[in-house]
Length: 185
Image 1: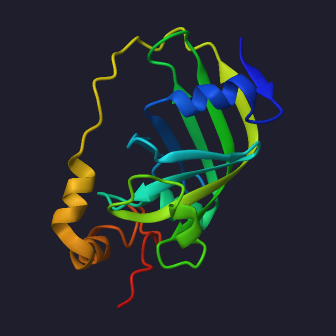
Image 2: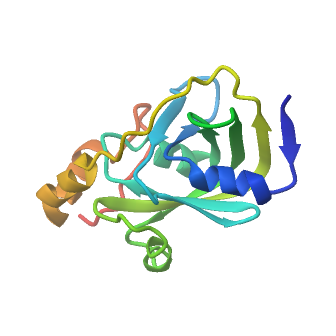
């Protein structure tokens, strides 16, 4: 049922680009610490850069586990599930890196995404394993629309409010690892 593919191309790329949401999984090194799985889904926040490379826009939010784990070991898996149409699950295993809004590369990368309000970084992933599986157990669900809450929240906070929020809530992970500590003092 499951199959490993050479690259993100053809029907896999079309499937990925058609999904309304995806899930990101990371974990710290070693036997301890918290495994993190985050749902993502603001429209246009994910792009396929090439057959072995993807990126997504990372917004200022309640935590920064993914950033902390990527800074520590780079391991990341991104999963897409078909909630409509034929069943399918696609997983992209790779090595990720954080391009913060203070990095020179950020200005070019952020242009790939239509909704940028509240963004703190672009996560770029070099994909070394692409696989899909049946998805027979994934329920059928209707897409009703986008929630506009996070971008509106970012607008209300303003630039300085987002910086303060990140300093307060995003500087370290649940396990005490450095996370989004890029904001200037």
